[in-house]
Image 1 (cartoon, rainbow, N blue to C red):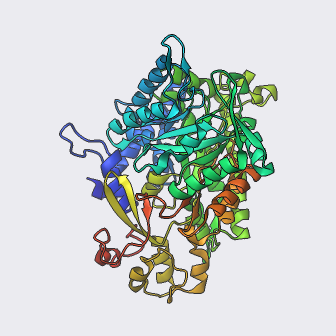
Image 2 (cartoon, rainbow, N blue to C red; image 1 turned 30 degrees about the horizontal axis):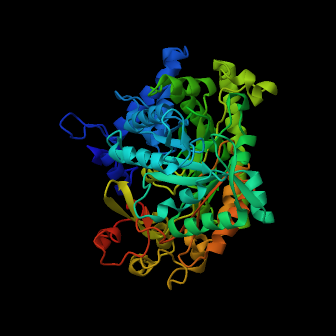
Length: 599
């Protein structure tokens, strides 16, 4: 049934839809086409229009607009919305942040709620800093505490047993603040093979910690139960251990808690201590992230022989995305009343973008060039201005979010429907469906393998952009693929024109500051946060990791992740496939028309 929709969808997109998203009959057979999937999602989300009192023709118009935007791959919501809208599950949020209290009852109540979230397709974020350290007193039992890592291992094991919605394994963010007595053990935990495989880990770093690092001061570790200092360590040495662990394993990243808190729109409701698993949405306990992304490449239009960015189409997509996501908050079925209360109270949404790298390439701009930086900054600025205006318009139509009066917007008398509106997500699978590049990342490679998207299956990817651009110049790209497969890059490959080498710069071709500047260009306008990885070559040293972390804090980013290629035995995207690798059917990949061969 899926084959009917091949005109818009790549082979890998169809594989992803079959494996994860298309509805199945009781016998397990797929009984839905992609067009029917998008119609199902649009119909379910547009039910909010009816709840808000829209006349039937107006509600039907919004349903059709939602369906059309998804079918044309101009906008896609996060995976749980695509999977669950219009089904018996009905849980549409990407992730939830859950509190970790320093009691057995609190810990296991949260564990139960996390299991419910994972069962319905969501991820979870936690800050474990409230837990007393190992060996500390446990009142009432005369025993001693087992410590943070023991409980994290329980959460990790529970996640291992839960498959999200029966379709994907759960994901967690685990944060421990830099002043916790067990911070050294936390930093090192992923050096053990297979440990915490269901967690992304980050150190919660306040400005005071970074100042101590930069000035060589001692740094106090404090028992969270008593507030007493348990040790004073060399801040720079602790920071070095963070960098060494990240160099070796990819974890931990850093989350800059003061930068996050300065942007907290509802400080009277609490302090933000953690984020969703990929770090792009800082949230209070029980809040959720409701995400969707605009395909920037779909906002390009031809002007003569050139492509230009269609700003009005982009603004229309932003307005539609804000309305769609506010509707998601309304029709969502939440796993627990506390989650529903916070979602409806603040109505946070996170509209973002995907396809930035494709857009820049089609505009003839190198990802790390000043011109690309200015274009990205313009996109982010218009995104923010239009989303803010759309939220204000929804407030006039539907009312402000319930906690508005006690928010920073209420104090400033700025009517808003949503406490936050923007977030730049990684868009791993939805960008695969849309046939574009992920989030604001550069091309990972011209040819590579994508693993763990469909369980144990690995998907080969060859950039259709590269094939298209070579063909447009009358050049045969196919004989070059075995050479490109060795590194994934076209730099230094004979037969590729210099102007194409300039724009087809991949993740490992770009210096770390090029990655950071792009993240900063968006963070300057995004009220939530930005998911972005700084890719480092295998040969990069620990000093380079330290430099990236320091620069990220200095630039005002809310968090930072580095990944040194090859530092993990398993990774989602892999280079260096050999021409005879069974994962690559070179006869197929090099025989199809680049306009149709979307792998």
